[in-house]
Image 1 (spheres, rainbow, N blue to C red):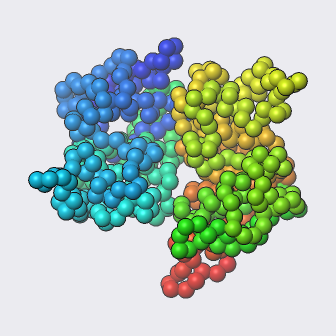
Image 2 (cartoon, rainbow, N blue to C red):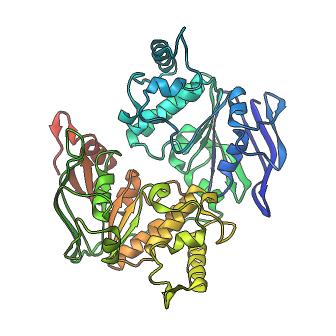
Image 3 (cartoon, rainbow, N blue to C red):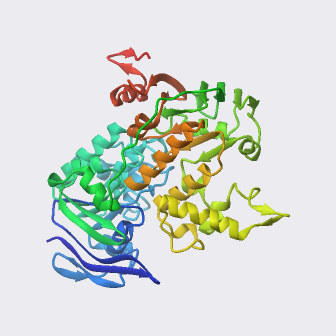
Length: 504
């Protein structure tokens, strides 16, 4: 056995993140580690990677007991980790990012030519093509993911931990990554993959271990299980199948007319975008990341200034208005980046829940503490947010639990319009079920929702109409009942099929 983690327990005060967890890995194996948000997956891998010390338990590598007090110690023992949020320098080239810390040198300074040659040879050896001279800021997210993997391979990793490796990738990039992982495993590399995407896990993994509440609830060969069984082991119950009523759209709530943002590029960031969202409908925006979705969200929410065009919310012009004014007129916003826009890490769960609700939760100019705590406690219960207490700082919650807190907070605004950007990014299947149900409930009650998601299955599942963005333009509109992933993927790539423009 290449790696054994025996009876690992990790406690934070009275809370056990891991409780007697045993996990093992064979050479050349792809072993998936799955579970609900806060189940203990990341904690277990942080222990393996030297970022945490176990309270008790033993790690054995090639039969020898080991203990890592830092990531450097893990790397020295040929264990590498690719984190969910990429740790690359955007202004550096691919080669510079990969060799950093192990730079080839010449008599004086950095040997750039050798670095490029080494990275080129590395990428060819492992079948992961990149342009070593390209700057990371010019790369797609799929290429950046490849760079992260090549970086740990350059460090000599034999065991590679991947934390949510497909979270921000397009369907084509996901397919390419899974093929690359299988090929690397065939060459003898061993993988531990943390993921919530059960279909992908079943496709790529050899074995799967499930955690719930810090304990192992099952371990099996991927070929011997299915999504339903894995879901039951993760959440401890059968998931409810969503039923979506036929939409009955009412009056327009959001009206965007011919808006453009020129930006600093040769092409506009947004180029004549027009769309509308009516009462009682969900309009989905699909597109490869970087094609103007973020700028569109920013323009509607008041976070970005448009150069031309009009944005109306409930008939009132909001282009140029402040974020506060727009929110007061009826907008709630689940942001695509929870850490940048959604939470204050040093604030407590209660304080983060209060954001946007302060005006409603005060009397005579004083905040109503008991009422606020009661409100946030109800969200914690309803959305299954795992936290030590309401006084826990946001930085100590898992990414998925933070996401659930933000979704609960924004839905509780009870506004006529909601921007839901990547609403289920990083959440488990149980939380996804709850969030999808809440979004459909808001729509059925007459709310208007603009859904922006990189998950095509989510777009197809929730949307009444689907708009596809490419290079700052809307290149197609599809009815969700007849749309397919293939049609959307073609439009996402520029709207061309067999050399002809795709029409809708």
